[in-house]
Image 1 (cartoon, rainbow, N blue to C red):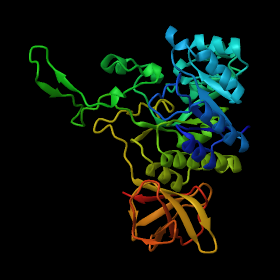
Image 2 (cartoon, rainbow, N blue to C red; image 1 turned 30 degrees about the vertical axis):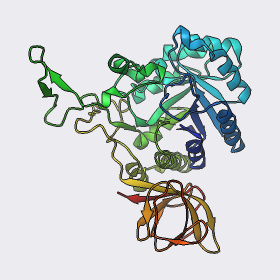
Image 3 (cartoon, helix red, strand yellow; image 1 turned 90 degrees about the vertical axis):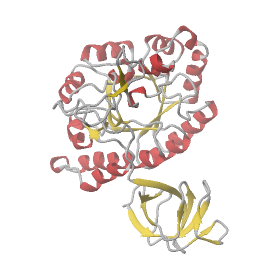
Image 4 (cartoon, one colour; image 1 turned 60 degrees about the horizontal axis):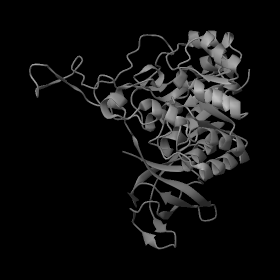
Length: 403
């Protein structure tokens, strides 16, 4: 049995670095156009080249999303972009639109993965794309374990599934609510996440009177989905022969990406070390609870009728504040050089999430600026700060504190 790929999101170059350093086998990114995260930082041509170089130097892979549903106007510049991606050496592109698929096949030799946006929910659809030349199918989220297994047994292409992250209230992202309410099309990368808004009811003959939309007194966020978490089912997913386990979140924080990637990396590796006695350790569940998230659900995977909506609030919970990144560590003085990302001061209790080592905690008893002058707080964005540590910290460790 082959070890599946762990695939992580990367909304910008720093997030790409974090994902790969914390254990992802591959990353997926978007360009400035033609992808479904227009609100993210995304990558221009120069940044794509830089990202490909960094990724390949680590022996890992990078995929680029070209997964909009294109109107005629969207093909302007698309041919040049596909040719650029091929020349840049990206490992695959993710496509959902048949027209873009045909263009990529006509003009390039790019490896093509079919995006979840194409809504593949059965083995015949998967085989259809495979017969056309797609090497991998990203399955729709609306599938149970049994359905995934059946598709795998009847389709030669690799399969990829989402195992963690935000869920869409609509069918694998095929939603027109944002476009209807705001003119911003979710299928062109401009979703306003209208499903997360709070709604009231207005009766036709009583305009201006707003009635709260509530269900069992729990609130009014009637289309607000929980977040997906399939960590407890990693062994079943691997046994089904899925080739790639995908984490959602190109617009999420470095803290989210690092915590999620490290957790799933550890679980996958642990399974292959001892599949007969595999279990999810409490510290892995605890880490997923620390990163920003809404209440977790297994979605459609377990097919057990679990409630998947949240009626009380649309905002993700966050138990940790992300304070900084360890850029250097001097073993002689046991001092870390930290790039600040959140305000902190002397006396704060902090913890360090490390790419490979165990998370550890300590109190900040003393710190200086980069030049060695004693300071008592670090309020400036990306300020460099030196802090003595109680034990060695790996480069790229994240310093955090409980909220």
